Image 1: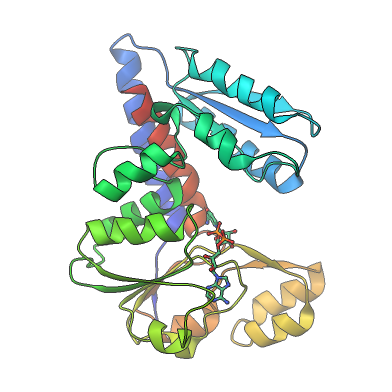
Image 2: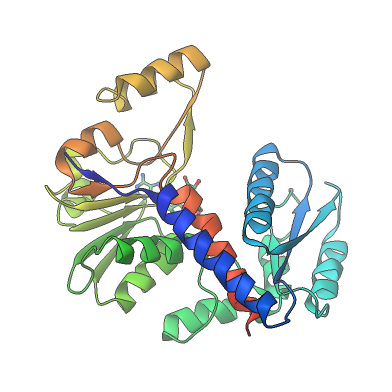
Length: 302
Ligand code: NAD
């Protein structure tokens, strides 16, 4: 039976460290770090994420400024706000909640953020610094996953790691961070041939795909460490019956509540094979917000 990598508990620890860092600043007579969060439109999932980030700020002593813009905001208005926040010396970090409403160019907006304030780590300057192994803001999800893997003492040097997914937000930076720790990394994606065979070679498997239950228990090398970044809502009972065959409680929730959250990995099956695994929810999700708080504290120290 696999060890559960408790992302929630580890995130609490990271948040406590941030809280201590904020208190140390205040004790030196410095102001609290400040994160500006920009939300355009009323996407319900984005509202939930923003609420979570604002709450984490409150919990750690970071000041948060919420900027809510209407759904019909144009690119010029959004970028003008970003410029205003860039030049505000009282703001340390800027986060533009994604996805943006149709018609807005997310990349162009993100490129407007001053790299020093880019606490999501999505600006090309920060991505370039990551590629070069130089200090800069690292994307929150992969950097927090690394923080947790190190805390659990997961061996990284020389480890055969497979990262499923090649997004700029998770897959690519995750692979680079693992490479920095001397893992031997393969990035797999939608065009990869023989995904199950490749996964079976991995001592460390990171799934960041967004396909519920894609990774079957039989794809996992016995004893491997599995990090499941995917967050998917399943409402289709037929799909649920397939992917939750080894998780009767999840299937029950799906049937009674009409939907259930799950990762990219078939957790029940994986538990029997893996050496360690992150659950969904309660695994990587809470870590991401903790990574954001860490980046915001760091931004205030620049
Ligand atoms: P994305 O859609 O940008 O990228 C998905 C990647 O998966 C792509 O590179 C694609 O090539 C690959 N892919 C798609 N289908 C595949 C298949 N059948 N086999 C192999 N690879 C395939 O997604 P993203 O932004 O990287 O997010 C991935 C997942 O992680 C989503 O479920 C998202 O909700 C979740 N996520 C979670 C957190 C968190 O805090 N836990 C943070 C970010 C993203």
